[in-house]
Image (tube, rainbow, N blue to C red):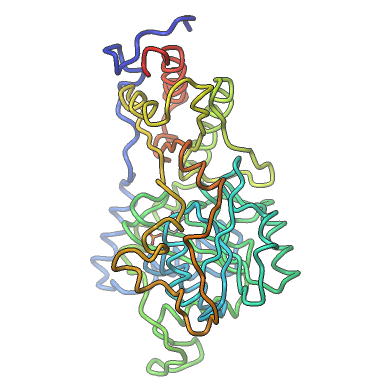
Length: 413
Ligand SMILES: *Cc1c(COP(=O)(O)O)cnc(C)c1O
């Protein structure tokens, strides 16, 4: 590679990457065949395809039970209900996640307690969890953010010692592992999403994994309108709801799941290249590696920028990268507790449980301050998972674009 790189695309130079990136979602003959099978069978409802998908998903995560449902948010809510989390309970979670992690807690009338993240993993900081435990704490809800596993040894140990449930938000972690076991089945129960942007998708869809038969039965009953295995059809045991997956989704997901292992391997190989090469660029920090969690899933590839050392603001860097043909963005604008929902601004605030009569005291999110979560919102860049399905050459284009921009930082400010 030449020592002085060519002119940045934003100043009229040639973009570092000109080809289109891999499209998402991916589908083919298998999806078509299975969908037609459903169509022509006339059995469109919660049957053989859904059951086969549940079994296959459980097997590839070494979990005893899989319970499908409509989406990841519902899977989180059903997991909380199965664990007995309800009015007045506190649930310890991360503020650096999609809102569903916290809104699921609110929907069961429990109180999200936000604990700051580790700067080099973007995951909940296990060192801070114990300090956040109170008499009201019922569960810990860690998120394997971007697919990087949380330290599940430590989280499970804290939970056991304090008699808490561990509910994994595994909505970025399909096919990821902890010490060889599938994420989502390492705590008590784990929730997955198959929404359109996710690494396996049916447009919408969700699922729970657990090794605990009683939790599996409780989760199934909740999503299946209160039915139980031993009961009659019109005999309902709990105030459940209907969150059932359709056969259409089961069919597509069966086909998608077959592609997962190869995709996990490709993304990981490409992320390894980026980790190695980006770490060499002054002003860029890559995330920590977790040897206990390989293979891992990548829903996103994250890296952080030190604006002073790199010589450009993050916002300007994003503009320059986009011009180079490298789509990327800065992710969440602020941690979850800064949302109007928690700040009691706007109409949505009426769902906020801060007035929960079972809780017995006020909780004021305007006083919550998680400095690491706030900082990462200012300096991280996200690359989407489909880019990691590109070639080694595509990864080199990303690296070349960053080097070029860095070399010309003074002219780009
Ligand atoms: C996508 C996502 C969810 C919610 O999944 P849906 O299927 O969209 O409801 C929950 N948590 C995280 C971290 C997610 O990324």
